[in-house]
Image (cartoon, rainbow, N blue to C red):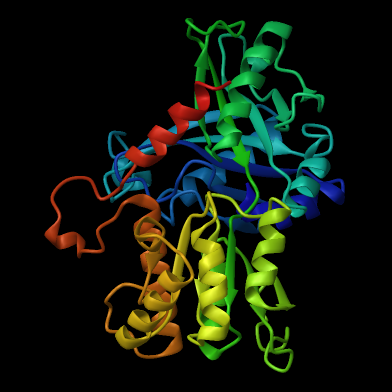
Length: 389
């Protein structure tokens, strides 16, 4: 829903009703992940996508019917259907799509959810998408991570609310959206009720140090990938919003001082990406030393030639960094794409970040046999967090 939230909340605030279609489950090579959404506005216009074009027409028609009838629907689309060539997914995938009407009446809490997302506060929405009693379908809970914050809404019973709230907080902790299965009254060992949990964790941060032309291209690429981008440089003449229009914020400060303050404030976590593009020792050595000593950070990379890298490594060792800490540094930054321009270099850096995040090897897919997705790391994180709740 995040990708169509602006359009959806506009319709909601106007007091109108929209059709919302959400991918809740995928099989094989589905083009869009769980949580991808499409909105059908009252005037018939469309925002977002559930399949990249394969089944949009069929989903559009279903959304129109759901708004008219007021009854939510769960439908499966894919090559296993008899109408595969009409509404199937040519990539061979299968998707389950939940379609519901969205208005102030059907989802009165949407405004507060939108505010949480806009303010980078974690929130999750758990919606019943299948149940033996049709009256349960479409009911939802709005869950925040802190146990002392009341849950909004109800699924139909205290037992179901408690079970789903507990599991939803576990999924929210890792930013995971997926379908959970229970018995009709929330029994953990039963079946019959399916609940789709859509997690809206704060956007991960990308900190770009060095207000140069490559930083402008990287800020644009980072924003495109969903990061909340900050560009920081001690030189006020270069660190201006006009030079970095796609960055969420531009900060004038010494890089190491800004990073230390952010870490002290708890604003750095295992999803944070740090890119040092200054290739000037007086800036990059102190900030890299601080970054590589952080207990939790997703990626640390530094721009520069092989010669710059060797000099930088020597300086970092002199600053007391260990070999284990230096092994976390991606330098020279990026993958070998033969990049030349700032824009190409930004793609190279983004590719390196993605590969390290998901365990990819950076090789052409034509050279790889088997699945093209790397889900083992995510599954491991999910299981680890769920055992804590």
